[in-house]
Every structure is written in C-alpha cells, then in structure tokens.
Length: 110
Length: 112
Image (cartoon, rainbow over all chains, first blue to last red; front, top):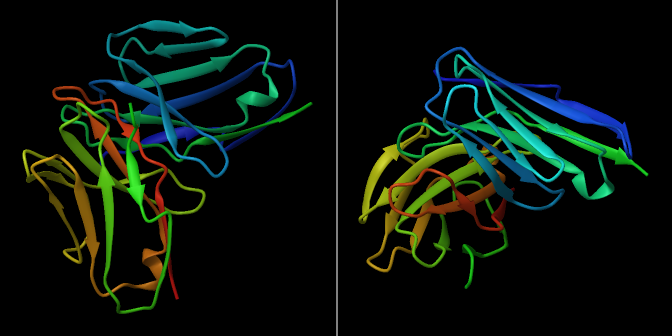
C-alpha cells in the first residue's frame, strides 16, 4: 500500500545548529502535511503543501514540496530547545485519511 | 474555543474486554477521524466519519468500530481486546472539505 518514508529516524543537534528532515513517497502525492508532536503530546498541524515546487516559511521553519510531488523537506534554521519533538510528514490524500511517515525525532542539546 | 477533546485520558483493560473511547471535535468541524499510534511510530488511520457514516476505513479488523452522533461527536469501540491494541488512540477533526487534521490529546489504552 501507499507508504511515506521519512529520514533520518533520529537527529541530535546542538542548539543553534540547523536541522532537516526528508519525506519520500513512491507515488505522486496530492498534498503533503507536516505535524509536530512534543514528547508526551499529540500531533499538531504545522502546514500543508499542495503545489509542485511549493516553498513555505514559518519563522525559522522552511517547508518544500518537490517538483514531482513525491518528496518534501522541513528545514529548521538555528534550532532552539523548544523545537524538540518528533516531526511527521503525512500524505494528505484526497479525503483526509492521512498516511504518516514514522517521523524524525529531534533532540536539541542546550 | 475548545479544541478536540477526548475521554478518558488513560485506560487499563484486560484482554478480551471491550472499550469505548469518546471524542468531541473542534467547534465548526464536521469530520472526525481516529488513529492508533504505537510507541515510536506514526499514527495509523483507523477510520473517518462524516455525516454520521463511516466514509473511509484503514487496515484494521472489524473489532474496531465507531459511531458519529448528530452533534459530530464520535466514539471508537474496540471488542475482544488484544495485548497488541495497547497504544495511544488519537481523534482528529477537520472542517468540511479540508484535509488538515486537528488532534485531541489522545487516550492511552493499556491492555493487560
């Protein structure tokens, strides 16, 4: 079935360093969504990308959707301890049955 | 404006028992989806309810069933619990016609 692969599984960074997580699909995605889940918390919607080649920014976060709509990335500039958590990408499908990747767990050392 | 609320927060059940989890969607949202999240994994789609009917279903056995009420709230029922059903159960709501999901805090189910 449809799968969304996410790498890396874990990332440990020093505060102030940059961080990037990548999401790949074998099939074309109608849209890609990104969520953040803090330790012990629930997934929180960050953004949705729909268009081929789309780039969106939220403060220190930059989201990209590949030209072929089969991959996406989330880049965080100058990480802070508040960025700690697991970042998930999800295939948004056409009716909202989200297919999640396994996530990238980010830890930030102060 | 209350977000998505779920009850109970935690639950311990014995193998073979049945459980009902409840969810109230965010105000203005008419679509409710349920997800199962095992430790260290991403959420897995169970099913989605819209207009009181199951609109889509993921790869889960018939032991998992649900219901949506006229006020858009929803229940997830799991029969004949197995140890492997232990997980965080997340409810998510979406406004009509949109796919982004707003999650509740989840119900942590432990089957012993």
